[in-house]
Amino acid sequence: MLMPRKVKHRKMHRGGVLKGKAKRGTTVSFGSYGIKATTSGLITARQIEAARRTVTRYMQRTGKYWIRIFPDHPMTKKGDETPMGKGKGAVDHYVAKVKPGKVIFEVDGIDEKMAREAFRLAGHKFSVRTKFVSKHNE
Image (cartoon, rainbow, N blue to C red; front, side):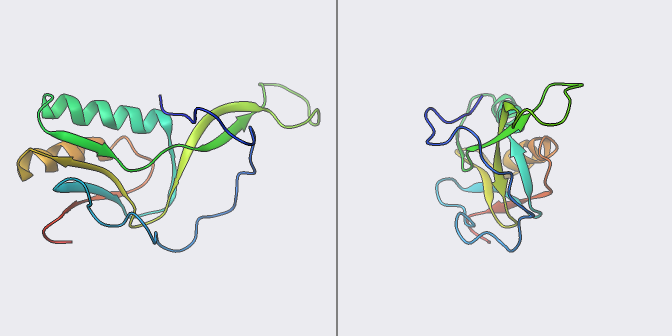
């Protein structure tokens, strides 16, 4: 699974509600087709990995893909039935914060029909709503 190799601070504040639209990473830059978030939310490293496996399995290892997001935000969790206090919990998993308009995945070297179906299957793995985009008509 994806996670930072080295971090300056092990634990972070969760942060509030993600407002506004994505300013960067909103266009298909590397491949021909992409999957774009239409709502904001947190995408876990497990969700990214599940989507990646779905895309590669459907493409049957033809073409090339790019993951445009990285889970660099640590989420902590305290043990079950732990009383209040005693500090912040240990890092449990990492998430990527995603705003509407952010391109999550890109592919190249496959036809549009195949890319559409691969991204339809991958879209079910994310906790945000997504749509299919292409480089030609953004």
